[in-house]
Length: 134
Image 1 (cartoon, rainbow, N blue to C red):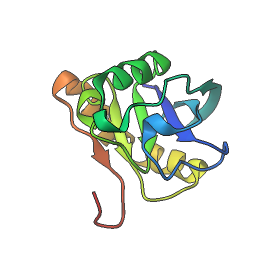
Image 2: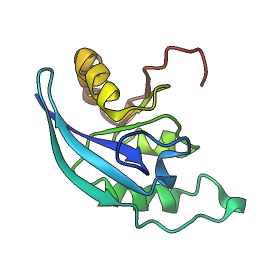
Image 3: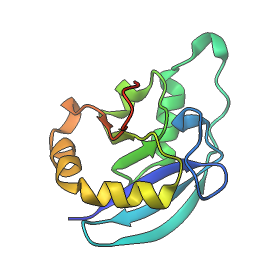
């Protein structure tokens, strides 16, 4: 089995220190237990949300459209929309910066990700954080 995985980034090397939906762009990889292949870079064309409506489901919908065809979302932070995003994706929280390292961790915990994906609309996010923060 392979998954398309989206990493939120501004510099193309590290995940952002802000919510997934606030990244400048997303690097999409196809990942299996043994292989990872870069697929494409997608620009974040979602509009800025009004701070009064933080966690706006409309923004979640826009990010969902940008991530069409992707099953896994990876970043250091997700906002309130993580609940909405979990219905269509498996969000994974990391406490590391480097995308290459995150890919290796994703491959090493592939069975856990596959099980979360199979949970369907009742799935929850996964935390691969080593520090106890959430």
